[in-house]
Length: 266
Length: 166
Image (cartoon, rainbow over all chains, first blue to last red; front, side, top):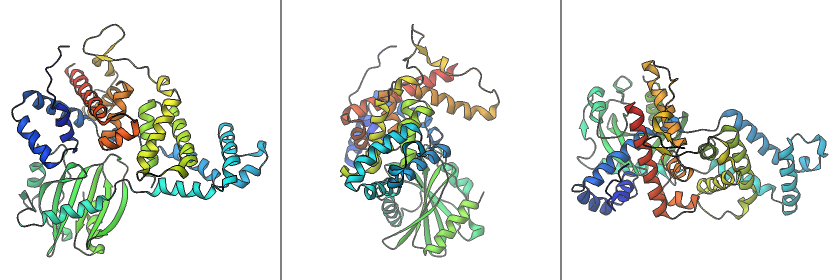
């Protein structure tokens, strides 16, 4: 293969695509990129590679594996009984029995049972992002400034959906919920969680609802989660491989209703 | 909801490229995580758990057990696999299955990347971690993370383009 000529800025081009540059760095890079064919080619190639990878490649833990793992952990949370039971009668398979008995013989002395439970709870419950809800609300407030709400003002989903083609690296699902009294107002591009996302704008009476959409790493559908930040309500769910975040000053019950209507709508 | 368990399994699966090995690695890692949790002072439990998963995967030697690693070459050199060969000819010709085929092909192309390139790619694209978090998990400098990620994507894009051309 012929070695391509290099430019020392290509890693910055990649960093921009990954959302790792701040606005000033991105602007400086933009000026360079406009004149650098190597960086343009690199950006195209990186975009191709990124487009190949989607949530279907994610290996979520299969249910049977999860079941076996949780059974082992549950067994570990009954330390005394396991440790006191005669070796032959232990319900654990050989390798695990060995591990646990070794671990508990040292752990029991230090009273680590509680720590184990706390550790598990922490690993299991701790949120993935520091606070995405906060970012979502900030994005919503920013968009409410005059003139920022819609890049494509239209109540027609067949106008809004194609508008995103070529502007963003995925096709966001666009639904009109006028029949449910949540008419579509339009859409725009926004920037959340270090990436470009689609924002769909809906309305209920005088209240504006932003629905942020981007592809999810884990495709497994997730039930609604709700949060409240700075007086705004947020509902999050995962559906058809998409992360969905609805935010509005609507009261929580109505926003949940919006989420449910959206979820059920074809 | 067990988000970190999915993350642990995803990384283990992509590193070992084998379901059984991945399950062993995750079990081992959870055990270590529970043991050492008392000494955990950080703020990012997911990154911390992934670091343990990674160490367990490397320690288990299962990185060698699954598929054998061979470099992808533009042309078939001795000992190398041409990207075209990674596309299974047994794929269903139905148009409806093109998507599935594409997915399988991409899966194979990523699996064929050397582990030091595959690892940052999976952490960035599937776990959506920042460069800093990837550097912490893999214990390599951020600059190296960036260049490995770049090479991984370059190889992936080029081998996929060759696959489509056939």
